Image (cartoon, rainbow, N blue to C red; front, side, top):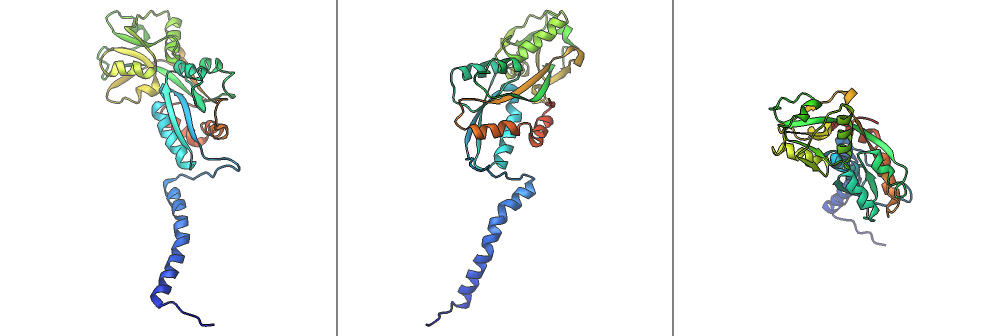
Length: 268
């Protein structure tokens, strides 16, 4: 048998390629290590999934950050969020909208969907503030000032969680406010103040924080405030039940709780 030896250059090229293969295989791990994100392998029997999550409007910014973090650590999973007022999300669920998980801004809305969801878990809490134009030109100090007929105050509609919370604290202090409009979600209230279409509005603390340089937030003392609770649950109609369950569970993980905390949400 005659053995044909590769020319020295060819042999070197083969050796170089052989050495590069294991290095390339380690490349992603190194990048994950440098970024501080550890890729989580799929559970045995689990498959990658495209998840649709219905989420309260007040979660818009923080969930975009959380979703990106989740996708980085769960390769193959993609998350699409649909943000709206909790009452609108509930209507979508009842109408059979295709989705995998639901996160509302109150337990009342979630409790009304018991036949459609798995067991909900509170993932965060929030509090209310009074949003004013930057610099608070009307010198609004507290809830009583919102009763001034010279002020244009905007609130969320009564069926919206933040509207219900707001009315609850106003009623507790026997303060009557006549809003110039009632909006379908908290972001619509915030927008009215940002655009100068209203002098003040009651929003969540985390929403006011998304508009630095555009609105000021007047704190409401805890004794006169309301605590908003955010429950998350899978939907029974989900076609990706395992992946949906994993995402909902992740929302209570240290990684997700840090993201929520950095955005101003509080732990349950």
